[in-house]
Length: 199
Image (cartoon, rainbow, N blue to C red; front, side, top):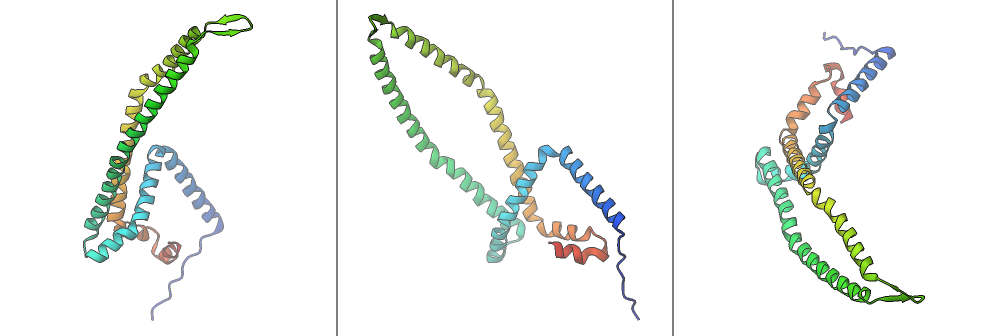
């Protein structure tokens, strides 16, 4: 006769100790790898969102999962590339219109302020005020142009993180069945059924 397997029950102090150790380990790992934690979480969310689409493509085309994942990502990257191509001409057109309107506004203000103003019998030289205002506005623009290199570095960094997120989510999607099997094999055999129920 086969003996029924009895799962050993963990005493409460042991459960609390293991839970505290796991929590401390999770906090330590989150602190240690905090710079990569956000991109990995974003990659996981992207993989989760794209998983049904990849499954649908895999079922409809009978492609292997890796090829279906690659096809979905190529379409996603293509859509992401088309967006700016369609928006940039419109933004340039709006910028030119804004620049033209600002030029007209400045000309009108300059004409109006070029005339001497008399307040209470005193002549006020508005031209000097306008010159000081223009110098002030130009001085505000100088730090902006000085920060251009910093903005360029931030753009390159954002592009690098985006590529990291795409590659990570690609592998999460491609190897999702292997990841699930690995996760299900982590708990001891006596607790695997409970672990599977958590998913």
